[in-house]
Length: 295
Length: 155
Ligand SMILES: Cc1cc2nc3c(=O)[nH]c(=O)nc-3n(C[C@H](O)[C@H](O)[C@H](O)COP(=O)(O)OP(=O)(O)OC[C@H]3O[C@@H](n4cnc5c(N)ncnc54)[C@H](O)[C@@H]3O)c2cc1C
Ligand code: FES
Ligand code: FES
Image (cartoon, rainbow over all chains, first blue to last red; front, side, top):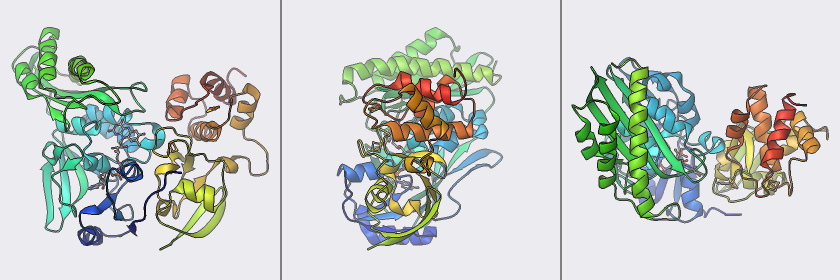
């Protein structure tokens, strides 16, 4: 059996106690949510861990709530519940799609949305989807509460801008504007789901009178963090939502990608995937906008 | 350090003290001698360690012992408490849905959980539900055949 090394174990029942335990434990104290990243990282010795702070006994961190102008998703909400939520499907198609192809069902049933953001994997499925949906993370730390754009949390592979005693409590996703559509696609080794992305792409688009008013593209496994393809986005603004424009944007997205080669795929194959998957994500986002009534 | 767990395991209340650095998989196999649950990879990739936690299939190699406290855990041993196989198990036997049998507990548990939720799943839903479990022997066609038989279709 792959054993875990010894660590101090805490099960706080309030956020304040959890923050206290994290602060006392220092930089090798870790939040435990679903454990589908942390337990793996501990077993393969990727992340030195001397204390584990299991936050699942703290009330109020689970559930999907309609705030009227936004959707609040508790950090401990399971990926399965994000996938199955009708509210998420209706309002945030890219996020629902990303959740539905993250890992396999028995992993998805443990994995949480907050843990996905906290892990800051460049291969994250939810990261790109949250970025193109303008999601913010709500953080509680020693100095109280603050909101930060999910995009601004990522600073490097496996690294966030969070302090070690910070806890993500919620993800808040604003309601889309009229004409909005979004999508997420990926390619893994074991089909589209069940496996970490060789590459992935999320796109969101706002179409009014046939013209792309705004657009966001974010890539997975194509850079050190979930990566905005800003040049592709810029190239689409003000253009008609036609195949030619989407194809040009896909080429631009690949030019902004900075993939590495690893056991899943070579860097050059990933460059090809950057273009192909951006194109598929953009097409699907346009389709999603049309289905939602854009004209 | 130990922590105390009060869980329902295969329908029976169990109270035990365990090391909090153990996984649920280790507690089941080593403290409770329920060795039907298998460890393949230990890191979430193969699915052979699947158990039902409050009825939902999860990879028990990624669950810390503390998270089993107060929960309902079902392992393959719980599917046939008196030696009487459930419909899915019977269908597996009838179809010969295994070769070495290493993935069988996880396959049978996941299929049982699916059929409890949805008594007539289509093939795509079956494939999705079992998608996280690798069968090294490649017995997938027979496994699918068995689950279809267990729904009463094609029998
Ligand atoms: C076999 C397998 C396949 C996978 N496939 C995919 C995939 O296809 N796509 C994908 O995106 N991911 C995949 N993953 C990764 C993982 O399942 C997800 O990233 C998951 O969402 C992590 O959530 P968790 O609750 O399990 O996090 P945990 O493991 O509990 O935590 C992850 C990290 O975030 C920190 N953290 C957790 N919660 C918080 C919080 N609320 N505030 C602050 N920090 C926090 C932890 O300290 C830890 O460092 C896969 C994992 C496995 C094992
Ligand atoms: S042993 Fe748990 S998934 Fe492989
Ligand atoms: S029967 Fe051997 S692993 Fe499936």
